[in-house]
Length: 114
Image (cartoon, rainbow, N blue to C red):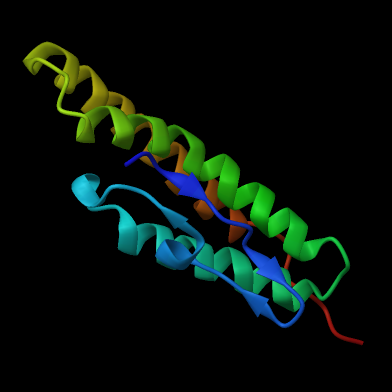
């Protein structure tokens, strides 16, 4: 079954990780997605703006796209050893981009209170 994303928020609710999408578990990336989404959602809620939850969903979707395609390809078992090696390298690159994005979140200026 191919992966898909759900709408990640609505009035009084928000979804993270597996609740917000389906992705074959073959890559064992689910808990990472859940923790990533929880971090992004908590920052969106803390911003308390009209657009914050929409931006959370856009960011979640952007970070997930490359992993969805690769996961579907790997889970399809229509590969040989050379192509699965290439897919795992691509998966590693996508995960490294995700880590770099999340690391940069901590480099944002601290919020100041009056």
